[in-house]
Image (cartoon, rainbow, N blue to C red; front, side, top):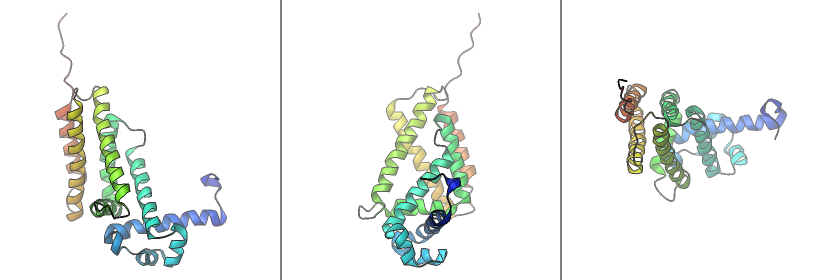
Length: 210
């Protein structure tokens, strides 16, 4: 595949059109859900025909898959693909800021998370797998923070509970923001992380007289 800087002609135009459609679909699926978020709604926002979108993605389910993977890539980029431990916690702060600035992505995540609880939903496998991987990533946050010396030692059961509480807090605060745009998502999550860090911080080594 040619490098991005070398793309030209129909190939480059096709990549740009796919991104344009995916971006529009993020807003449509986030606003209306998958069932009511029709390809026609997406086509109207982009200024193309539904047939043109089907040609790019195969069908509506194919478009949804492209949207979800694009969302996952953006999230990873914002958080930082190499971040670990305390740096990863800071990445979650950045994610909250990004969601405030890009509400459509947050709408999409919350909507799909609710709809995809049904095994029949086309995003069910993607969302359940992502939830599992997200929890494992968050367990890794606490393991790495302990290894870095930032957090006091914890058992695996304690780590699992902290990961569950962290994910539940993020989702809960995001829902509050979606319901009330005046809710300060960044400030509230920042206070939560500061409190969590203070609660789990490793004790300072004692100073002894020699």
